[in-house]
Amino acid sequence: MKAGILLLGAAYVLSQFFRAFLAVLTPILGADIGASADDLARASGLWFLAFAAMQIPVGWALDTLGPRRTAGWILLGGGGGGAAIFALATAPWHIDVAMTLIGVGCSPVLMASFYIFGREYPPARFAVLASLMLAIGSSGNLVAAYPMALAAELVGWRASLWALASLSTLVALGIFAFVRDPAPVEGEESGSLLALFRVRALWLIYPLIGVSYAISIAVRGLWIGPYLSDTFAATVSQIGTASLVMGIGMVVGALAYAQADRMLPSRKWMIVGGSVLILGFGGVLITAPTRSLLLSATMMAATGFFGANYAVLMAHGRSFLPPALIGRGVTMLNLFSIGGVGVLQVLSGRVYRSALANGAAPTEAYVAVFTLFVASLALGLAFYLFSRDSPAD
Image (cartoon, rainbow, N blue to C red; front, side):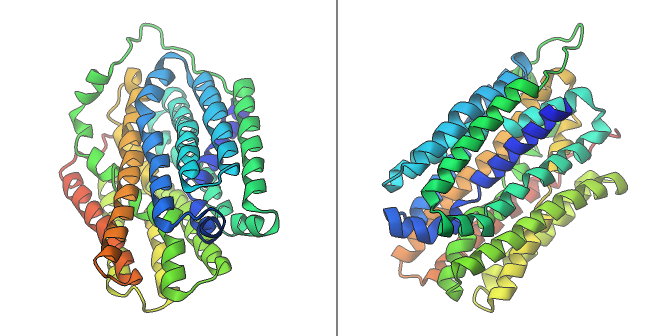
């Protein structure tokens, strides 16, 4: 199982990479196939929407087929096949198709590991194990920054995508070989989607988990590149460096939240505190968008650090789930998380385009995008304030 967990971790590295690498390819794809920032916002949003749409069938598959077959087959077809289509792209709509397939391919890998953690480890260890997996996977964010920009310049983006298609295929085959499905619990009844929605403690967690990831992953995965380029005339290297620093912040933040979860008495109020800080960082980007490249990059890195609360939010929801609902439960929480990013990615592209159409300068259009993210986070936090804290593990 150790080898299996490592392979699921490798698959999650690919998942993190694929959701973030478009940012550094913005200038190159624009020059080669005419893909604009709006086109890439749509393609990135389709990745998240496809990922989110798969969560209900993935939850069913985890509870019935197990993580080995669920993660292996879907990553093989979607991840490997989608990356190959991306490598062959000659028009922006080809990127849409490729990113949709890749989103499908990446949809089960993190939930497969969460399912194993939830079934084979005590609830008190879930947040720590989930945060470690997120920290490992977040290295994909790092590779999607400067190293991806460098690879695109040295060997070309098409050759880089062919290499990613091959790697996705190899990891999927490794999952088939080494992941072991948890043994069923004797006498355990199968859960249902209806039973999941009867867990009322989750209702006020869904809104925040639906938006909390968006402000960091949307900025890191897409808008950091166009914003720094248009506002500060940043080079590809500078964009890659800023993306790398923000990615490091997300990795360190996931580990810091895991440690804080073990030390602080309240999981809920820890999450509230981090969310309030993110609202402050977003406020700086809105009120001082042209002050300096260093200030903007620092606010984004801080957002990445304090926005890495996904694992503890998942642990908060997991604490209310019975064993029969773990597969469906964690995937439903993930559906709200990734689905929220997908919706906000698509909306952000429309907000950006609408602002430009109404005569706004490019920087003003980015302010409109940041305002959308901050307002959404504030609304989700308003619901979350009334949620129950995690029961004692």
